[in-house]
Image (cartoon, rainbow, N blue to C red):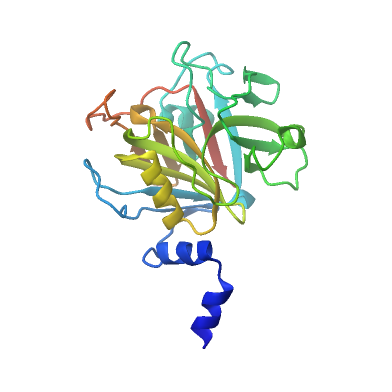
Amino acid sequence: MLPLLLSVLMSPVSMLRAQEQLDTVPDWHKLQRGLSYWEPDAPEKSILNDSRIFILKADPRFCNFRMLCSSEHGKRNRPADQWAKDFDVNVVVNAGMFNIRNSRTNKGYLKNYSHTNNSKMNSYYNVMMAMNPKIKSDPPMMLYDLTCNNWESIRHDYKTFCQGMRMIDCNGKKMAWDKRPGQACSMVIGATDIVGNIYFIFTRSPYTHQKMIDFLIRFIPDIRTTVYLEGGPEASLYIQTGDTIISKIGSYVSKTYPNDNNDHFWKIPNVIGIQSR
């Protein structure tokens, strides 16, 4: 009777999510306090490379988060490893897609303390990453779904904001990826879960955005607000902790950069830096 009772108590969505995650037991490897990673095989093979998904988990209780912008630091774009070296952070990841006309301005709103990189809200971008809370007891980084949290209700709570494109909403619901739905690429993604952990997910092997959304639902229990950060050869994730260095470098974009040959970090303008404490 017990299994039947559990089936009655679980919602159809919860049952489906549980079934999707049955064969994915996380194998987290600790890097240092507050930082760990897991690199599972993707549920489906890609057309290129190793078909693995790299997931970095940051516990905000033990991490500091920084926004680093070339517009604030000498107007000089840097590769991810150089950002890490110049600003002494353990992790560097893309903060979001940028305007190719000037190679510095984020496509969504971006403000860091008194410095404004882009003052305009993007009506198509429904995730706001928030860092550096004004009240110290608040989480040092949060991902807000702007359809669930009114912008006016959060804009005075933090000193740093960066806007991006939503992939999964505040309730864990998959978004339909209407922008270039058939495009496959390397990519890096940011996400949070129901208890506030922050994740950065990278794949070198190209997948469609919709396929990656499906993978994330499968790999991260209770995933919530999720943001697309970058794709193709600009997609970057660099980690340096103790004697460990991990470099995740993107390459393939269908039609515009259809190869797996890129072997170095490209210079990027805006990054999130993480320091373990």
